Amino acid sequence: MLLTFPTLAQEREKILEVMSRQEKYWNEGNIPAFMQDYWKSDSLKFIGKNGVTKGWQATMDRYLKTYPDKASMGTLKFDIKEVEFLSDKAAWVLGQFYLTRPEKGDLTGFFTLIFKKINQRWVIVSDHSS
Image 1: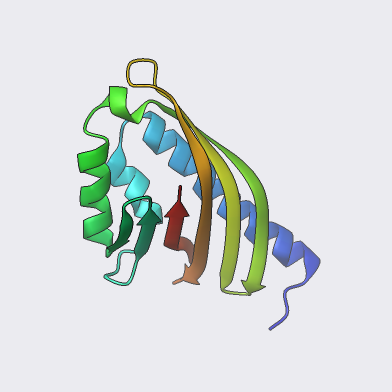
Image 2: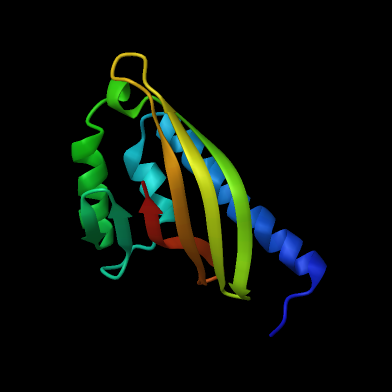
């Protein structure tokens, strides 16, 4: 099924809502809520500088270990560069993140997310952040 422009624009907005929610939950220090937009599956993949983490729970555990407190988490801001639809149920997002952490030192980098529409909901199935 080919997406028409209004539908494509609506679906893009839904993905941007996910990204906005992610910023909000992160900035509240709420990693469990932040993780709700990830695919709750053993097939979820997170790729970072230390390699590949497979599975939702392993990814959650990685975030909790890497960011154990609000000072480590800091304040997150996304700059979305591109949202490209691969089909009516898959999209690719390219962006840059800025993590402001006065006590720990700021971080910045880029990410590529693969979203799939599962049960009428856009979820992240692969996250490559560096």
